[in-house]
Amino acid sequence: MENLELLIDLHQHGDRQGPGGKLETERAITLAALDKSRHLKIADLGCGTGASTLCLANKLNADITAVDFIPEFIEILRRNAEASNLSQHIHPHVGSMDDLAFAHNELDAIWSEGAIYNIGFEQGIHDWRPFLKPKGVLAISEITWLTDHRPDEIQSYWDAQYPEIDTASTKIKLLEEAGYALLGYFVLPEHCWLDNYYHPLQRRFDAFLSRHANSNVAQTLVEAEMKEIEVFEKFKAYFSYGFYIASKLS
Image (cartoon, rainbow, N blue to C red; front, side, top):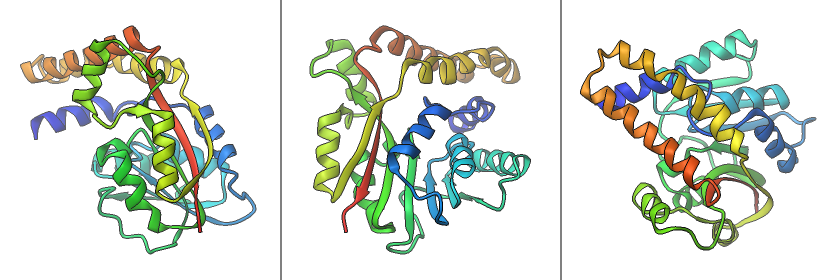
């Protein structure tokens, strides 16, 4: 529990809890071809403090249920929605993405940026599909190999961290087998990792360690984050997040 509390404290102060960007969310919205003239129902799963949620609310005419299991993140999203005059469109909810209460065929779109790994890509695309209306849109970013072959060091690292990492062609095949038609795919550029996520995270390390009196647990957490950054900078040619946009076949 202490580790989770420290992880929350480190990440709740960031605009993002993972790689991504406003322009990339907007690009996915365009590829999804969601009808801006219709009032839409959308779920943003694993929303964190709501960077993608706020973007969706600004760009679409929608009611958005934003789900995350961390109450602190949801409270920040609630405050940000109020400050942006978007509270009437955003409905923050503390909950788990593997225990959702939506009705079958309720949603026009399901969004999940950098979060489906919590339950696994294959489970997520199957479990969430019933909630989508026919031709409803699934938009998710997922860690993806960019090459067919890669050094043993990075292969071993991701095999230990997230064994479901795979190439885009494999992920797209899984989507098609699960009853989706691909609408679009693109790779998150380097700035989504470094400028939007890792560099702001690094700037928070000193204050985080100070708040926790440089405890061994806090130092271990920072070291793990530094290792993750080091891995990305060394092997960024081999992996990134792929953004997958697909529609549910009727």
